[in-house]
Image (tube, rainbow, N blue to C red):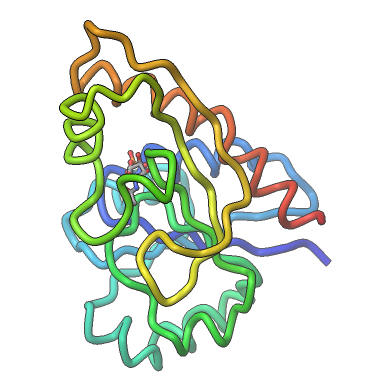
Length: 189
Ligand code: GAR
């Protein structure tokens, strides 16, 4: 039986699109659904263009989990990927999908994790602190932001001339290369 993935995203969804493309011709892993808490998120337009089903839900629906649980069950979802999803995952959802929810974070956790740490906020803080390296972390999701068991890290150099924008581009390139491969490895483990 193939593994069915749902991707949760709150914004642009470039990782979501990259993951969909990576598994497009796979026989064992299918992206069956894209879920967003933001009805204006560009990821929903990407889903339409890619021909992938998409669903919008409110924060209250995430917390109560009833509507989402039904939707995920209807789509036979086995595995959940958070790709730029900015809300906390409720305990009920973690219980329903134990060790089957993973997240990508654009920094070397445990540094630069937690509430408010996303996107450019992170890259600005890394540069202000004069860190010499940054990177991405892929981890299992638990009830705390950015604290689940780490599965994988990839690093890049932060040079003296880097800006938050240039660092974002380096990190994005790392994300596109490693995230689909790590998803595949975790599912096939
Ligand atoms: C990605 O860089 C991802 O690592 C980050 O949001 C971006 C989403 O970009 N996630 C977090 O900051 C989670 N705390 P995308 O919408 O273009 O894929």
